[in-house]
Amino acid sequence: MTILGIDLGTTNSLACYWDGDKPVLISNALGSVLTPSVVSLGEDGQILVGQIAKERLVTHPQLSAATFKRYMGSRRELHLGTLPFLPEELSSFVIRSLKQDAEAFLGKEVTEAVISVPAYFNDAQRRATKRAGELAGLKVERLINEPTAAATAYGLHGEQSETKFIVFDLGGGTFDVSIVEIFENLLEVRAVAGDNYLGGEDFTELLASLFLQHHQLNGEELNDKELAVVYKQAEQLKQNLSRGKAAEMRCVLGERELTYSLTHDKLEKEAEGLLRRLRYPVVRALQDASLRPENLDAVILVGGATRMPLIHAFVSKLFGHLPACSINPDEAVAIGAGIQAGMKARNLALKEVVLTDVCPYTLGTDIVRENAAGYKESGYFFPIIERNTVIPASRIKRLYTSHNNQKAIEVEVFQGESRLTKNNIELGRLEIPVPPGPAGREAIDIRFTYDINGILEVEVTAVSTGVKRRAVIEETPGSMPQAEIEARLAALAALKIHPRDKQENQLLLARGERLYEEALGDTREIIALWLAAFEQALDRQEERKIKPAAAVLKQRLDSLEQGYF
Image 1 (tube, rainbow, N blue to C red):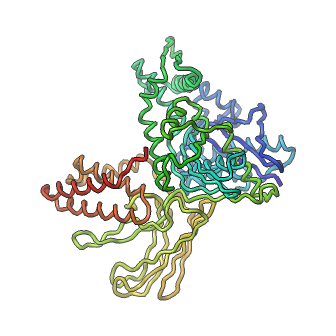
Image 2 (image 1 turned 180 degrees about the horizontal axis):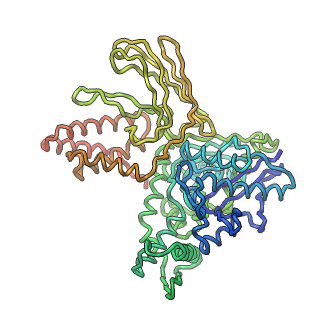
Image 3 (image 1 turned 135 degrees about the vertical axis):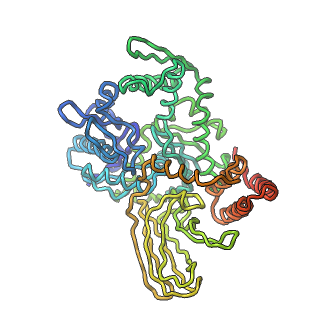
């Protein structure tokens, strides 16, 4: 039985399989291993996928869709004409096309696949990816993180027997980094980080914006076809800048031909904000792995967007040496997925390879804490499985009743890095009965078990009675429309004007929250105590007490925060 390895990308998708000796990329009907992740509706109602659909992005923008991977796991609808589709439905068309190409290439039916996902995909996004494969007619039991797949490809392609390296994976719509250590036949992922809304498309969008600004054009006043032309030429400008120090962009809008010239130096200056966003996940991954850049033996570039000289230069400066790219960056993830598919099929040539992965997000529950006034407040995040824990993993924590005569305890399950649950993603909840009694008498044991496919099992046991409740988290979080989120935030912000709203206090709190999210273990608790002390000073609303408390917090944060570069 042949199992496919699929790289479901934002810009392009690929399929690969293990032929018994090596991974083999599968060519599509046009003879290319790259299939553009674009879907279009033909004039006769037929679904078109790949290069043909990509061409129709310009000619028939209202009937075409691209970059829908960015919305996986949400309920956002994208339209092909008047027909609405969820992101996973559009993705299923791409996967089905890859499946058909593979069956033509292999001469037999394919029924199972391993699909790659960004390491920083949350539970909802992973489940949506799995559904996309199933909608395409494939059994999908295994998802593999994209940087892990790339590391797998390099781990079996001539790297030293003992090495530490970072995989810098910048695709069309997502960015991931993974720190990986190889020892003989053990490939261990030490830490992952990333940004699900950062990729090569953002650089294209930047170039399009620069073009519009240069000609004092308002993008909202252009029609869909004109916008498609601008973005098409912006993408071409990005590619041309990869081949020279300067390039020109030409667009015909109406009866006017407009041009815009750009140099590497100008692009580097304009892209400073995007480059800062690239740096942040790198720093977080290094901190979680307790490593510094000089501890790494290599930096591996993955993803089509890493072809940009701007990215090469950025990575070289960041790490102090040139990155490695001995495998085509467009193909590394698919090759790794193909190897993983061979491992899943128990191919004898791969049976000695051991692959470990990590949990990309912290998983925990909501707890009650006592505030400065002596009142009990819920809404505080209690980590149970911390991010970058090697998986599969199982962790157990004991918690106690917080109020007198409680008859039940509700366990809410969250993923995220914020110390406040309102800023994290709720995955689900379950309730367990306990005997009434004084606060703190009754206890429950909460066990989280997280597997290699990103599936979380929660088991709660009442210590005194032995009663158990169990749930496999299957809800779809993160589906609230952005407009509704913004409306709720605006309503909360309008409730009161408070000293914490002053910019200097906002900055201190935001900085503390960031450091809390970056930290793990005891350091997290220390930062939480610092922030709680400062919040107590803010709650008093007395400037003479707030100023010294702010100075103390700033000094503590300064001493804690050490630059990695």
